[in-house]
Image 1: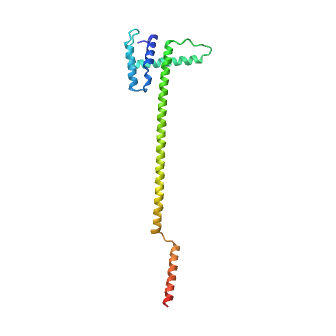
Image 2: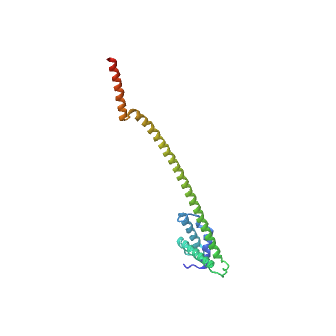
Image 3: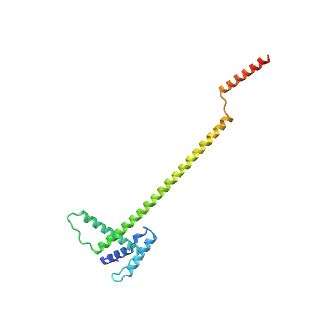
Length: 181
């Protein structure tokens, strides 16, 4: 099928009316909306359509890209006043606005999800740090209790301790011998 201006106009009106951009890109809902648009166009009798959902979607993309290029070229050209916008141009502007607003909504939803994920991650990190702090405090407490017990039970004797013991023992022996004599 060859696309004429009438075909393009009816296609743009239908796309603007149904708005397939309100659903997620690549989803089955968007696919069913394109299918619905194709079925509606195939039912038209005045300009006869023989299209499927893919050809409709692709042709809308072509028209939008062509219109965007035309707008860029008009902005670059200096001294040229743009013509009165046709009904097709207005319909394409509407489609572009619908697509951009849907993209903005998706971007806002994605940023909100990312912020929620980041806040959850920060909360989890805080809880993890608290748990680690409590664990380290518990370990310190247990190690001080255990070290006190270890010091009293299995205290390693030093050389000075041995010498002190021997000198006390010698004094005691000397006193006992002197008393017995």
